Image 1 (cartoon, helix red, strand yellow):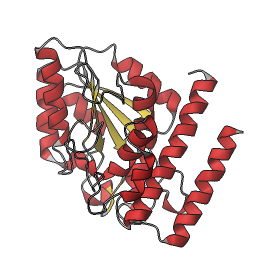
Image 2 (cartoon, rainbow, N blue to C red):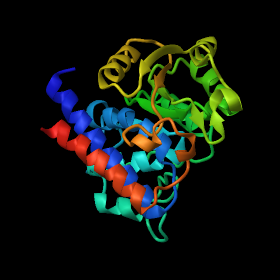
Image 3 (cartoon, rainbow, N blue to C red):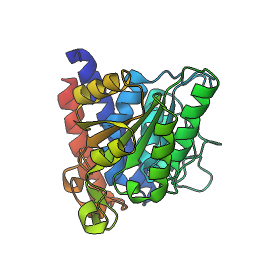
Image 4 (cartoon, one colour):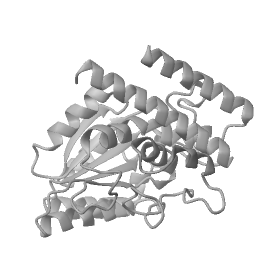
Length: 279
């Protein structure tokens, strides 16, 4: 990736992280840890890869994205706002009565949201259906899904994986946000699905393992996925809470909001990083 393009993505991802913290703090609830970990993946897809148009959110040939780990909605909302789907000022209304930005994505009210999600394991099934429709009707759009490493403990994920491989849905790419933490602890402590790559391969998928917080590796994996005649699972090793020092690799920030003091600390750190990137 060209240095200028990479730097711009890094700048955008930092702004996305600021939007995540802004929203969760204003809501006094939410899921910052897993939102921060997948911010780079979403930034790459919406700002570099996907065929989309913020001025025409429902255009028929757009690429689709399903945030199967719907509790990471603050990340998706911040990306959509930064991409121009709606005013970034709305991020401060997260989870407020009357706001379109509720705790989980809502395709009926939020421009740019392709599928309402929240019940873990169900989003990937919707993504499979979208990819099948694209193939069936001869459309050319691609479908991307973001799953959590804890989410893939759900049996429905593997039913969807089996179906996708049987239908040769080469237009489907699933990112597994492998930050190794879920609400009750590490995935090993709860119910590990490891080895994740071997499981997806057994179900007929092509797998790629990357650093999910590195834009060069994300781009390389996305480009490789285009060359494979089967669904692709990108196992993206990430850092939960990345960008905010006290949230990094801390399970207690899976579903908690920073108080005013910690909000200021987080924003100070992110603003310093932004200034460094923009220098």
